[in-house]
Image 1: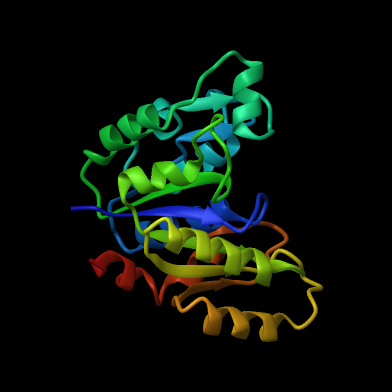
Image 2 (image 1 turned 30 degrees about the vertical axis):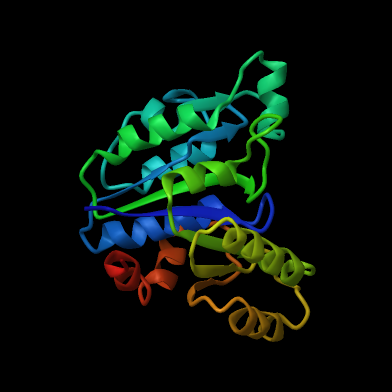
Length: 231
């Protein structure tokens, strides 16, 4: 049975996909069956494989279990803006119930590790009444929080963790992704997060200007076994 997790972030552009792909790569290097899902993606581009979202394609690239693009990213929106606004502009209606159905269908695929990545932060709206947090709640998934290490990250991380707990889901760990190489008091900020979030540090990803996922995968070597055996 797959160990499945929902990947969220403290904000947009904090490295959720980068961290998720690195974790998948770490699992793949250990011979594990793994794949990632990106139920909603805002921002499409023409690629060699056709129109797609680069985040979803990156998850596919580092998954050992190969799914079709529509299975990985069932809702693809054209503009790289808030999903509910992009959907309105395209005349689409995103409902959590449909996303749950897509995800549960993919989750029937045998695997050791499955990562379901959100879009933006925890409370990103999907429509006027639902957010991506509702998807995680309906699937009842434990949550991994990717913290973009930069000025202001403490407030964002603590508020996000508070919201996850309030929604009744366990925060199983955090990933510290150093997106600002010049961040002041980096270690002090990280130490504060480790104390106040009361969740294990799964990985500390250093600033990698060339975005080398295979290098970042090494950061998960110590926590992969924990994630693969956690109830």
